[in-house]
Image (cartoon, rainbow, N blue to C red; front, side):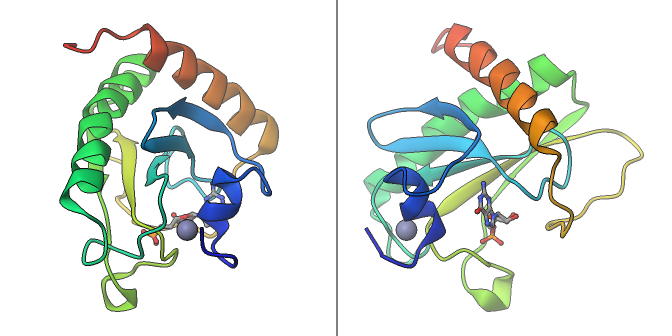
Length: 143
Ligand code: 5GP
Ligand code: ZN
């Protein structure tokens, strides 16, 4: 736990989030500045700044969950494609220094951006989290 890390505060429930999915090693919630509806973040439960600090096991856990969440957003939102990526270091565009993976539904013709400054509407985020969560937990592991 890192005191001034917003993702650690979410993990310890000192800050709220729109939760989608949880495992022993990861938590998935909505990005509150979504670049597209359904933009998810998968975070490690332990605090690692980036790929250089995270253990291969922790990174594997996030990778494993990223397949489930990619299927979840693709199926639930009928997305044409899904962006799965993560950034390391300010020079690469990282803005929250706690290892995480973005999972972003994408549709043909839409402009691709990495960050947004516009906060999502709370009611829409809540409804989206409920939909994606129900879908994620209903998926079989081999789907
Ligand atoms: P990065 O730029 O580090 O790859 O991604 C960090 C992401 O965290 C950004 O897309 C940003 O919108 C998101 N973010 C920043 N603060 C919060 C927050 O308090 N809650 C949630 N759910 N997402 C946040
Ligand atoms: Zn943290």
